[in-house]
Amino acid sequence: MVSPLFFVSKKSFTIALLYLILSILFLFNTDNFYVKIFAHQFTPNETATFIAVINELQAELGLVPTNLENNNVTLSQNHASKAAAILTPRILTEIAEDNPRLAADLANTLTNLQNLSTASDSQKKSMSQLILDLNDRLAQDAVVRISRLQPDNSNILDQFSKFFGTILGQGDKEVNSQDTKIEALALANVIDSVLVNYGNAYNVGFDMTNMSNMVMQDPTKSMSHTMNMNSMNGSHPTSDMNDMEGHHLLVNASDYQSARALAAKSFEIFKSKLEHATTDPSGNVTVFITNLGNGLADLNSSIGKKASPMDIMMMVHTKVHPNLLQAFNLELRK
Image: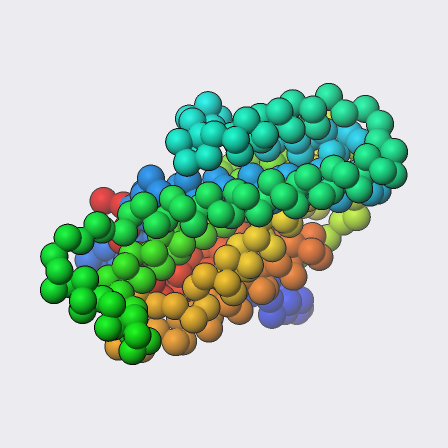
């Protein structure tokens, strides 16, 4: 009699093997091996958190005109509401410290967007341009926030040294390293938001940002499972959103759109801020940066194909976070 294991796919076997390895690491993590290699609880940074929020806000705002173009006012309102939830009073206050006009425009625009019922073609065009303008201004505010971290050095010799270093193309290595770490930490936060939104989209019922939950799930149910959205009207009932085989079903279109937009934003951050930057130019980090880029590209592709939440979770925790950690020498939370 042929064993049922004979029919297990190569991918299923690989996934099950990885889960077994992770389980062993949880039980026997000598010298904190697990923490050093797989953990992604990076040391929090106030500026990095702010930059991440700006990126998340841009992603949600961008989805408003996208859905208006498809005549789906409900989803536009959903993303406006999500943007408003991101723009907490504390974040709004922080934006106002640098740009009071931007803070006021954001608050007014989000109020109007949440109350939007219909939109003519001219209104759609106007709204799209308004969102582009707001997102550009938000990007500028993020630059201002990072620049405020640069030390105001009054030492005349140091100033001359930095001046000539800039002329020679060397720049300020200390400042560049600091800025790169801020962007890397912000990227880590945005990727966590991808997981949160993807988990909500599929009503997984557990925290996808917590890697230990990968071990707790049944590995035989973690293979790719794709499913088309049946509706674009937001949420469906979520009492028990699993099919007969135990796969999670897509139940929230707006959260799925958010996850996809945030994944695209993550890749954009990598390409524009991190691909050619490193906190350790003398170190051999090229392979980690390359692997990080590949991991983010795979993440975008897999989310676009509506891969299973477990596959997305595994991709982030084994391909993205470890390489982000190594490439930019990030510190883990103690």
